[in-house]
Length: 312
Ligand SMILES: Cc1ncc(COP(=O)(O)O)c(C=O)c1O
Image (cartoon, rainbow, N blue to C red; front, side):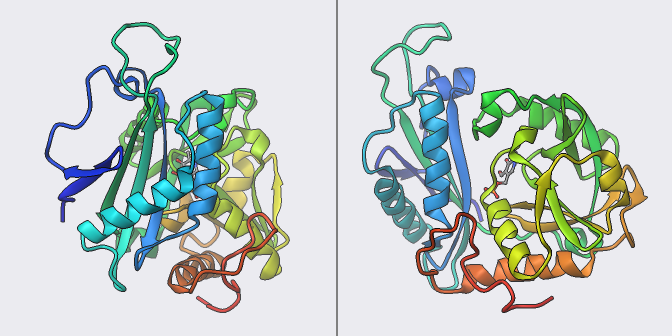
């Protein structure tokens, strides 16, 4: 079902209404940042971690979104979910927060002082990944676009996503489901909208933050999960050979969760079907969305529930 309303700068407005000025720098320049998260039964999953990353993105771009950001966003999400009928106990939603630098009358790249950021929240009923994707897994290829680990924008979830769009088009042309970016020096980085994990010789491995990746909230959860289930997670520099020769592979993101990757450039990874650890990671991650909020933890990336509680 299409959303009936969106939340803009503190107000709910009809989804079909005109919303933004054409001079908004988010539209003109991709001068905007965003977050995408899941909300179950009206509860925004890991909102604090998303807001931490959002603040980091805003700071790097020197966009001042004002005080009490987390409280304002939490209230806005709640209001929107209720309006869309997604805040009920059975409600399951994908939520997007977008903050652009705002509208400016003139041209030019350097932001003029004193712009008023545009804050938008959208919500959709959660669409789980297609059953065939979960049953058969994804086929991935390598994008011709490279990630520069020295680029500070790699860590920013900015709306400037033409690289990802281009890579997805490349993947589609190659009859694949997604593309993996390599770093400029040839190491695995991440997918177009997800982090990458491999199971190699009983260990859970994933490209380190030095590989120009987005520091995913699901990635952080999985690193904690991997510890708890005895997979001794390792973050490092890995190559396409690790991917081709892995026992299992998967991608992960807040809304889609854990998605098996079973083919690399058409050739099977491991047994060529979703492996037991991948299925367990997906089941455990999904289970934590239904669990009551976890007590506060100091450990970054600690899972919200006992990841051993659910099994594949
Ligand atoms: C490029 C990229 N990497 C990784 C992720 C996964 O991040 P998260 O788990 O916080 O959703 C995303 C999510 O949209 C992404 O766009």
